[in-house]
Image (tube, rainbow, N blue to C red):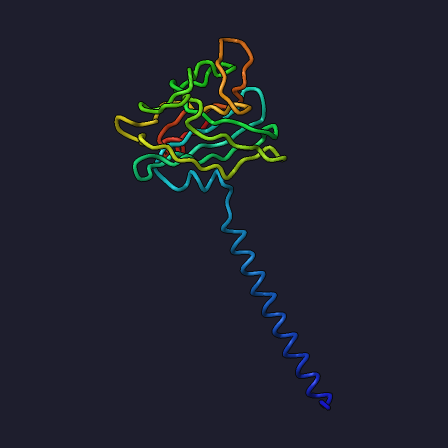
Length: 193
């Protein structure tokens, strides 16, 4: 049977251990939280590549598309918030112009030469969660680059509601919900708009 001093000593050791572990856990949590950034910020801070800041004229939807070279093509990353939950399609469009109210100005969906499906199917569809967000979309496109003759720079990125892209006509409603123009990542980081 243990004496009172042995039991007290064991309790003191256990209490000291728990205080140290608690402090270590708090420090680890502070470092983890302090190091966290939104997906949008992380994607832009990677450096290089192309970025399109997505905005909607008809809703609160905002987001960013980051495209960077990888092997014989590019990786496309998307982070977007404030969508109506559901299925969407992301598409590259022929003109870098998001000035019209229904994004008719972006032109038709575009795909690189040799693409044998509809240009609207170049990138896979995605799902906006019940909170209206999608922050983990990653896709790969071959045969294009961020610079040079096969560059995507200057093209628009349009988010379409539903599984397919639709034609747009001036002043008529369509399924285009957000738009942004691809530009050098560094240029967009310096822009104040």
